[in-house]
Image (tube, rainbow, N blue to C red; front, top):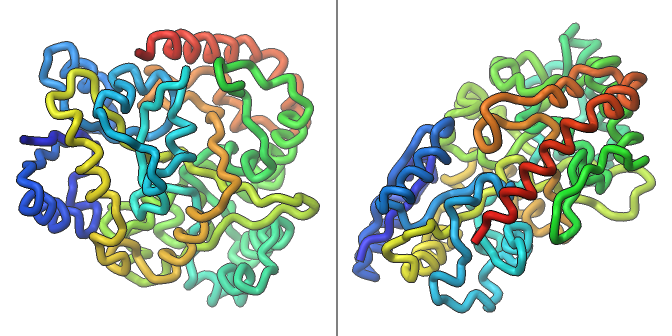
Length: 385
């Protein structure tokens, strides 16, 4: 029996995975074939393999958008009982549509990608700023403290901005339990842009980006080269063998902290990141029944040296804390990501460049773009089988 795994990263980028897979093969007699594909052509190549009856058995998924699940079949195809506590029911719920589940993960696995806030510890020392990790441990890591630190750093360093990020505005919206421009009511997607809370939160975030210029989208190179203090993104970027932030990892200055608490908010909401890693059983899989057994081994933290998996012990501690949070929220993104939805970002992505005072008028005049997205998602939803 062979289990064919489809991923855009090679197995060796999961530190310890090659050895864990080899041990799995010896103990079970199941051979593992690992196929990689460029992320830009990942979904189209998967659809082609399904159409040509050469489908892999299990494929990594980045998020629960139905447009990215059209080549995935429900987990019931495995014939496996997923009722035990080992499986992450929260992830599975977010990957469930019409009572059918299309994504799997283990509870508290090290192979997840909750969002975390990364920072350059050498800049903390250089500009005599309070260490965010120590503030968090002492219960003083709040939104106002974070924003003040961004402003203090920008002024002291004469920097263009203080915080970059892999995710767009959705992470800051999620901290306030806001669903973003598109909502999901359990059965269908809908346009959420007329919601008062969406407008209020979006206006405040817009000013941070485009009026005060404390944040800037992406900017991974700037963060890695010491030109900004913070970077917001998924835990995948803190894995020791992930290619991003290589200079900071080598210098030992890439540190992490959870997102701050929001003053006046009684609950803490953990954003699950744009990289909401889960694994789906592919349509036409030849060995679907072996997939759960492989995932139980591959995603089990006990089969890895976790100190070698993440870039440092602090990151492992923060990751485990974030994964343990009860109020996780996954937010649909503002910009349409070409890698899993359409060829190009639609015009609503220009919201990322809009000052707060212009948000209401921008959203009103571009609401039809979100209607088109909603229709596209609901159409894909109807095609899931």
